[in-house]
Length: 168
Image (cartoon, rainbow, N blue to C red):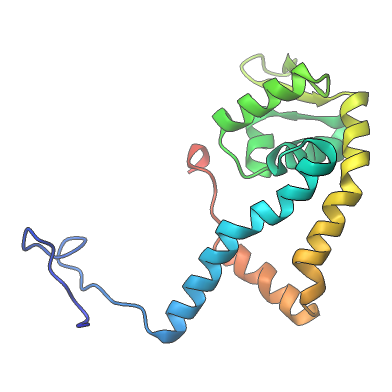
């Protein structure tokens, strides 16, 4: 393939910017990354669903709350930490409220915000699910990587830092 291709309308991509096709190294990096992005969440979620009836996102939300001071966070901060949109978080927190794991209250410091707070029952489910999640993370990701690989993965993740659309 040539380095540039014209769209059917005859115009170039992104104005007149030259389209650069992926070389072999770039293609290997991209296909490896996209495979991880698409397959890893399911591998991490499956044991949580089977053993505890939790999605990976639900576990991440509950886990972040369990680590927060007084087990409370503003919804926006929690969405950011769990790498989800506010609308997705709102739906998950509603389900967690129905299960008795989370309560929402207005933030007394600023009523425009809502706090999510982990209940004792929510803390119990985190304590039950944490070993399952940890074993899955180790088996699926960390045990296959040496210290250098782990540092490289952390460095790459930082460089590619992508935040949900709600947070720009």
